[in-house]
Length: 311
Image 1 (tube, rainbow, N blue to C red):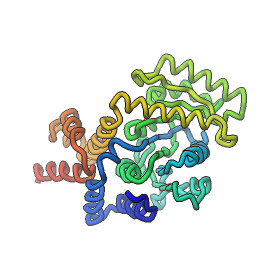
Image 2 (cartoon, rainbow, N blue to C red):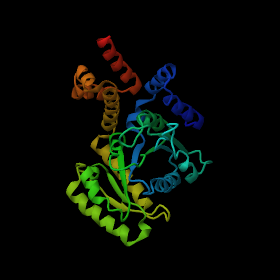
Image 3 (cartoon, rainbow, N blue to C red):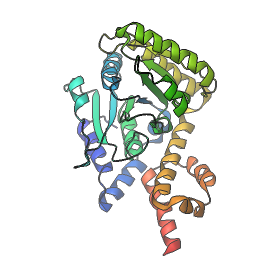
């Protein structure tokens, strides 16, 4: 809460520790985070897109803009896992793009560890800790292809970054990705005609396929290397946050994110049979959404309930 970098690093390491005693301590830590911070404050932003689109470079440019506004920024960069060690292959790349002497920026890399959806299982609990310590929390997905929609289930505002002249627009439509983001961005604006063509394609496609309610999804272009269009992205994501506040949806979205995270972990460990034994997914979601507190403690309670029934 005092935004001490060493305390934040220790907390994130604790959440990544699978030993039973550390897990219990992590559960208590999450339970004691103030609800006004984790459910009502800050801005949790997800950035996704195909490999090589320039997500990290764009994040660096965005961070510079937010720091000019005197906002503190926490970054969770989810990287591909090494098939040998299981660790993050590119874990230090953002450190090279941000000033290591800037105390207002904290970067944590973590491996996806085989998770489908472009995120790590630790992303949500780590996001809660970062929300308690930062004004803005950025979640960058692993960048492996067209199935990275989990980020939309864990962040307030989802940004999709498209590559000029990649021919991916039709594939995005097929995969349903165009229904996910709240902000669409064509990076590498400086390539010229190809970027303008992709921008036009996305604008035309979005008009037929958006499912974001009353929010009008903006389609923007930017160049991370030249710094153009970055201010417009910052304005767009802030506009979406203000829209969520006006709709009274910020808190309910985050409670839903936590419920989905718990249900997903239970389904992975106990299958559909386990979910049905707890009353079914719909009832489980309804119960969990009304509860705050630690996702670890809620999961452990439900797991112990299932184990007791079958032992």
